[in-house]
Image (cartoon, rainbow, N blue to C red; front, top):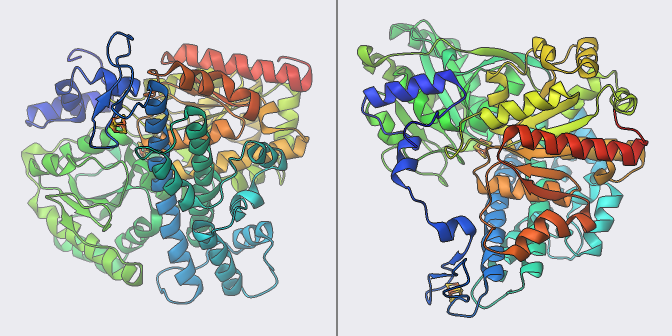
Length: 625
Ligand code: SF4
Ligand code: MSK
C-alpha cells in the first residue's frame, strides 16, 4: 500500500510528501496501520448489538453460522445496513432540522442575522405544500416552517408532507404498495434503531424495507428541507465562476477555511470577513486581506452561492493545514476528521469547533448560536486574524494548482439556462444529442486513489454524450479536473458538446452539497412528470465512485428507491449475505425500478451506466443514440 499512488490530484500527492517531511501522519498512513482490516466487518458479518456478543458469522460456512441469540448472517448484515442508513439519514435530518429551526425563528422575527433572500422560492415551496401564497412573506414562511417541523414530529401514518408534495405520483404509489412511504423523518430513524435492537426484527426483507423507508425520509424529507430552506434564506444558487484546490490559499492574507456541511454559520463568516473593520484588523497584523475558502460540503454551499473558492474535498482536509497558512479551520459537523487537531499541532492553525454536537478534544470551541450569528462569526474571524502572525515561515508551502470552473446549477438555474422550462433538455434527449443524465455523488475514500473514479467516470460519460450532474466531494474533484469549465465541453461527444456550446454550460453541472442530492431527485421527478413516465423509465443513472460515509448509504438507497440504477465504486459491507445482496442488486428492481450495482473500475462503471442508459432509451424512445 505504501507505494500505491494515493491521488489522481498532483496537489494531494505533493502535499502528502510535505506532510511526511513535516512528520505529520495522514489518513493514508492510518489506513495502512489498520491493515488488515477486519474481514467480518468488511462482509457485514459482525454484530455487537447486545452484550451477549460481539458475535460473528463464519463466511465460509465452517464455523459459527448464528449469533448467540440465533441471528443469521442475513439478519446481521441487514441490521448493520439499516443502522448505516439510519445514521446517514439522521445526519441529514438533523442538519435539515437545524436549518428549519433557524428558518422558523427568522420568520417569527426572532433572529436578526437571517432574512428571506429568495421570495420566489419561498412561494414555490409554499405552493407545492398547498399553503396560501397571498399572505405576507413572513406568514408564508411561518407556515412553511411549521409544515417542515410537523414532518419531524407527526404521529399519523400518512406520508410526510414534503415527500407528498414533491415526489411524483408513480413513485408514491410504489412506496405505498410496499409500505415504505416515510411517515415522519425522525420516526423512521427511531424505528430502524428499534427494529435492529436485540430480539426485534430478524427478517432481512422487512429490515431492508425499513431501511428504504428511512432513506426516503432523508431524500424526500430531511435533506430536501435543508436544501429548500437554505435557498430561501441564502439564495438559490446561480452559475458563478470560482476556483478549487489548495492553490486558492494566499500566503500574504489571513486564510480561514470553513469545513463541514451546514451553511448557517459559514454564510455569516463570509459576511464577517468582508467587513471593513475586519479587513483593517487583518492589515494591522501585516496581512493584505482575508480569504475565506471552503472544504467539503460547506465549501459547496458557499461556492455555489457566492463564488467562494474551495480548498479541496474530503481527503484534502489534513493537507490544507500542512500548507502552513491556514490561520483557522472552522468546522461545523460531518466528515470532519478528529485528526485535524493533531495535524494543526505541527503548525499554527487553530481548529475551531462550532457545534455543540461536534466537539473535538484539543480544538478551540466557539459555540455558534443563531441569535448571535453576526457576533460569533466576527469573533471567529478575529481569532483567525490574530493567529496570522503565529505562522512558522519555513513550514509554509502553498501548491500552485487551482482550477477555475462554474458552479451553482440548481434546478432553477438549469431551467433558466434552458429558457424557462425543461422541455429543451427533454427534446435534446429525445433527439439523442444527449443520451441521458448521470448523477455522480459522494466522497473520497483512501481505500481507492483519490478522485480517479470520480473524474474518470465523469469523463467517460460525457465523451458518450451523457450529461453529468453531481454534488458533494465528487463536484470538487470534477472542478479540480477542469470539468466545470466551459472548455470541458471539448471532452464531450459531439451531441453533448453542441448543447453545451449553445447554452454556454460545462458538460458536468455542479448541483451542490450532499443534502442537495435532492436537487437531482427533483430534476428527475420533473422530467418524468413532463414525459408522463416513471422515474425508472428514464435514461438516467447514479454513481458514487468513492463513497465512504453512512450518509452515502442513505443517499444511494433513496436513489434506488426512487427508481434510479445506482453504481457504487467501493464495496458496501453486505457481501456476507447472499440474500441481502440479491435483494439490493436484483430483487428491488422489480418493485422500484432501481437497483444497486458494485463496480470499482471507473471504465467498467461508466460502461454499465452507458449500457443502462442505452437500454432505457430503447424502451422509452424505441431507439439507441
Ligand atoms: Fe450476538 Fe444476537 Fe447480541 Fe448480535 S444481537 S451481539 S448476534 S447475541
Ligand atoms: S462532504 S459525505 S465526504 S461527499 Fe458532504 Fe464529501 Fe461525502 Fe462528506
